[in-house]
Image (cartoon, rainbow over all chains, first blue to last red; front, side, top):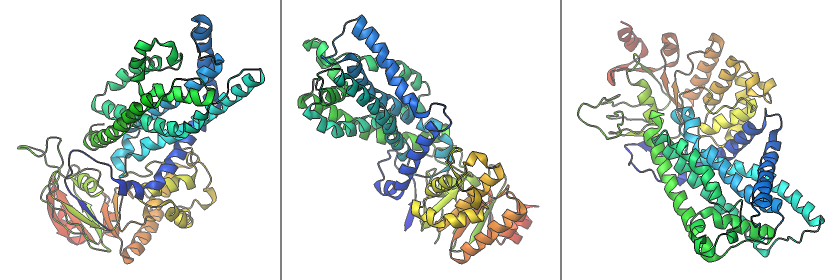
Length: 276
Length: 221
């Protein structure tokens, strides 16, 4: 094996060969991330149970009981929990992915390895808490069905793995964009902390897409998370607005954001890491 | 195995310009198979820049270097260690960061633990170890890497006498098997012990190159 070290182009593409050489790092970093999150905390994984429960409770009180917003005929708690499982995944991924460069600047300065592995492993390790929260959802689901609710999964449930894949890619791409921008412009994470809650309300988590007047739905559909969450609810709860016509643009957006985010992240990492 | 570096200046965002500060410039040298090349020079002479260039952490703005075989570099002891992971898990992670496959580290785990004297503590969380023990673990992983070319940037500086000799023995064995080293240090006795040849960097270029005795005599005076 011969390696040439020479001046590099300003744009850094994906080095698949290098990623393959370092493939073991992915699993090890996923494990490290999970351990660092769970060990040493009093309640450990229980936090991931409480957090969506409390948010769902707030949503039930404010949006369902208070504002009497529709939940597509599904028990309100199930409706909100399903949306929150997806939303929390994205939010958790973005939190850790976007901080990759800042939190591990020491490692980036001192060790050579394919940089993309770290942010990607955060998107995988966040699946663990998503799994725990899905378990909570399943528990509630069972409870409501036993209590006589008529909510049932739809055949769309078999489509969920594809949506999960899209969700991982979307969170990965967006996280890389935020990571790159926060390194280049230090105050970007303040901007992000303003955008993030707004994004939650521009996403049909606390309301169904069907509650939006048809003439205005296109605005909410611009948000790539919209079809993913509606698809999740259609599959799991049998109530949601999902069509290929809405989904394909969201897939296209996901692909564009993840490819462009990857290149931007690598380029910024290459050129700006010394200034961290 | 050979490295040749020519004109390896510090990259600037706009590329080289008039009046650019060159961290290193006009370097041309070779490290042979089985050689321990020492790098000496005062602070700011460009030693770390050279190490970073050869580690692929910084791109040169001009010139090139060829490396035959696998490179691993240690610029910081225990990179990626997590206090809550066990000795074994951290060794695995650290080894993978050095470019090894997981099973390659596992194959050498016995030797690594033996070398660092941590055989009885392999499942202990690293935070329960003393600083010295963590240091030994990290150095041990580095010295057991599969790389054909290992860069050590002031890594053995804080080793005690016993461990230093142990490392020396290890380096010597590896050298005989054809592994090459680039050894950066400010510790003169260590340089004398480890290096087969010295490169003296001054203000980013080579001041002198030759046997440790010859270069040290000039360097220290």
